[in-house]
Length: 433
Image 1 (tube, rainbow, N blue to C red):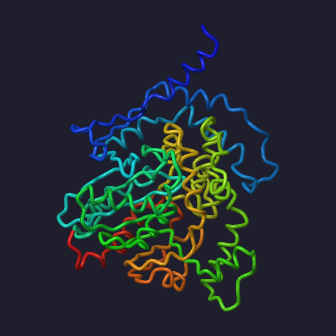
Image 2 (image 1 turned 90 degrees about the horizontal axis):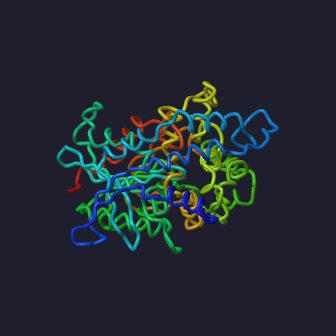
Image 3 (image 1 turned 30 degrees about the vertical axis):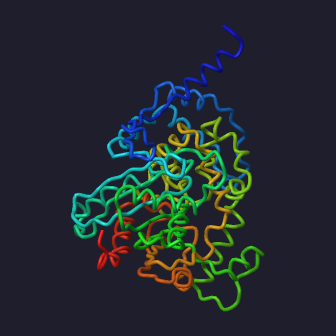
């Protein structure tokens, strides 16, 4: 056998197409083309082989997770991934929903489009974040499109559009610079209009909240309003003090001081991942080569309950994190998401969105369209109402919850759906969809 042919064969086998996209009859790439997911078995075999071949480092020198994901935790996670986890279950869930792809501004955009059976449903585009994907939104599809099955009113129904961000999941990977929140926000308007929605609302958390905020700031005439569960509220003066590492400024209320301390702690202890992705994303080659490197990177961009690692801790060791559970979030939920990143090889392309975003996610949004804000208790910071009113000039809803965290749709899908219904309900009074 010629030298190098084995590696070439392995490369070819693990880079086969993992989706089936129906061609447009006219050949028009801007047409709405149905998509189905089907990962070749060879790719799943290769994934398991790579996991089992992991070269492990020494264990941490502390008794907690202050140095990162503990060795015993990630080893048990990897064992389950290689031996017990079944990607086909996730694949079936994805294929049970209507999925499509369309080209916008030269880039293929993948999205789920689920129309409600109820009349006068409000069109809503929901954007995921990092390290999430459309998978983090699967549990909210039925509650939002079929509210009567959950004790809510038919008048609260939504037609849902859930796109994959550029460089994420089954969307295309940008080959040039410029695909940041602003361009993505404009693309979402094109997508909704292409689907026939003259008026719609937008929702997001994490990076999805960044995109929703930008849409609110751009204020296209089609946008009725936004709902965010990761609000951008930090006033410029507060941001300057945080950047300087100063103690809380004088004159802050108790809520404002608490938020300041949370933001200060996050900047000191949980910012490394964002700095790397916001400045040097291309350096993260391990995310494409090692499943365990990818998993540990995606899991450990924070600590405690506010991040997905809580579900891993609970699943592996069977105890609560910071006295609370991770809600409906399970170990296999996390593996669905991480496996999607692996199979689509989007670790680096997803990280580039931070580079394109200029790493400024919590600065006051300056949004003029009607805005609803839900503040979950285990979010990175609890946005005070005072800051929120300054950032969202037409605040129609503000609520602080008693459970849930940064990935609210994933962790608490029923509660999240209730918040979206309540937050956007004021928009329905005079809107015609």
